[in-house]
Image (cartoon, rainbow, N blue to C red; front, side, top):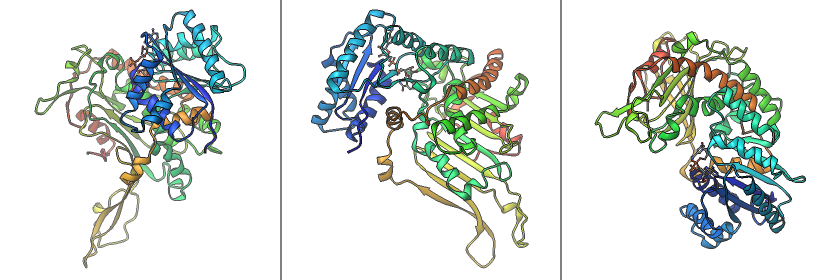
Length: 489
Ligand code: NAD
């Protein structure tokens, strides 16, 4: 049996969507796999006036599709407690503290606490402040703050929030979630790069022509208009997930794969981001907003619930990001993310240079293609390598073929959810797969330039149909460099 890490989880926002859809199933799987077992308890806090029993019923409900073993679910949910809570009311934190102390004794939790912010971002600072003023921090165990996205909406607000939570928690106690860093294939990137000489040696500007990162969603904004219309794809996806995938692909090899060294590598990488001036934004970044689909069976973004009918919020972004460092100077990193694209797909396509001298006089040089290495992150998981060779037959003609590796459905079944991995990391005190403040501050500063420019100028939205790969301008962005998107569905 695995060594259990005793802990009390205090989930602020325990009645919410994130808690029920992601956190309770993740905790349950940790329980099922013995990462937590007897020595854990969960306090859910939220505004509503619920009893422990009612809360436990909602937790059981959230686990229904994951487990049929009722006894196990019953036992697991018996560790859950509820406290009706208003984040602004000091008295509620005093009650919470008493409950936390009694559960600590009951479950032998060694004063270890995880404070999980599953509430609206505007409340993060208030809660962190009360954790300090009402003295919920324990003297002996660990005290870790888990904070969800969005972490601010620009550099200034992110800094303000960071200053607020830093009054109570040190950087080493703060775990900023970027759930893309919990994904199997995203965690795999550094191992692939650094443990395989075939990749390690060619992962630079001498061999790579361009890199393309695609985070495509087939769904629209659906019911999340209230949040999304104030955010948009640039803030919701590029500043965090796209940038973190980019870092996995481009950070220099850390001396060792420890949290400290990895964050040092990422910090240096982001310091070398080639910042855009306001005048350069239009040449390097493109925004889009979805309209109806061809058959007009899907509504446009602006027609969605809680969305301004004249909204200027982008549901699509494509951009060209460059680094000013010795390894990748001159290599364009094209990124794109959008809603209502033809299919859900997260992938990376690395296009290698074609600067080879063709010694086969009978082969037509124009038929020789660039090598493309693709990392498929989801929904499938695998790799593809596009190579040149010959056609079967006597005439020695060129052909391209692809080497494919895909994880089997059986293997995919065993892949832990991103939140499960991250929860284990939090219990282990491993920061590697969380976002450091240095990374956030650099990426926000980069994004702010684009956002400010876009806020000054209206775009003629909608500019792409639902079910297509975004606005034409996104193709032009690559065409100007003589490139094109590899992935077209
Ligand atoms: P939600 O609206 O479903 O839940 C919010 C929770 O906060 C509820 O439990 C509510 O009772 C509680 N709450 C609200 N105001 C409160 C107050 N004044 N005092 C005490 N409790 C209060 O929201 P959600 O979708 O679960 O999102 C929670 C957080 O997670 C947000 O920061 C969101 O940006 C982030 N997030 C959510 C998802 C997701 O899939 N839902 C994904 C990524 C990030």
